[in-house]
Image (cartoon, rainbow, N blue to C red; front, side, top):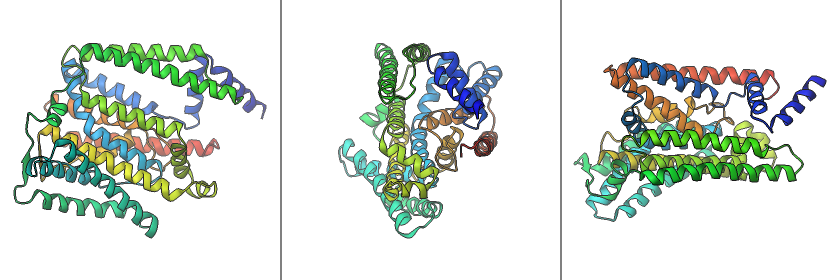
Length: 409
């Protein structure tokens, strides 16, 4: 018992220094709290191997392409993160994105409505699909696997019906949505301003959080650690932005993805709703007895997932400047799910973060980009991605056993 008390004291004292913070991370990892450590290590290994095999991989031009290709499916993965956190799944995000693309094209091109109206109509469809899923799940207790599988087939059929005999609709190249997805990049000076704002925001949010914990009599991070963390972020992001600016720079579509990740991270970690999501994913019955409206939480995550899928479909259609019968099909659905799992979100619920969508999709896109540069067949990409996904699930299962043995659930 004294050992545990000493360990707790060391953790509390560690908050004031970088060395102590690292010690806390190591201690948590030993007890199964791996967080995003595996995916970060995996990403470093993948980038190292790909760069050795092809020096073009880490070129600024290729990394710009990698970020742009990651945004749409990454946003879809962000929705998957929400449903996985409550221990459920949505297998229809690909079909939702395809139907969203079809609606965008029909409303914007065929019906001649303003692009903003077409975009809102497509997003409203995503909200509606998520709400229907939630009602079926809450009222009838149908497993989310079955609901979303039915949605996958039904929405694909609806997509084909919406497109009609045309089968494919091209979006005008001079339209704002196509320009946003293909050619809109952040001005160089503004990119550095955004980096500075991000670093200041990290320090300010951490400082306010620490002050609130101190006022409540709890341990909190010291100002020195918060400042060091913000400076580290400033250096890393500044270096990344500088390198990307050697080519085309940072795309606004990728910035949108990052903003959504930040917003979801805030909602999941700093709001009552986010705490309720983790509580439901950890133990739904305990959450219900604690007074959490479990049905409302399920509704919110299903709606969020389908909405993000619709946004992803809009961006994919805009990037391709077309919507057709193959929109949302292929490996898009599985890549969105795989990105969340590879990013450290547990299939068992209650573990993971919004950052998992970002890291996970970068891993998948890195594999795809690297193998393409090596002129390898797509079959190799599927096998490698599948192997990485399996490894992520094995790590998650092993970590869960470690947490159980350590008494951390």
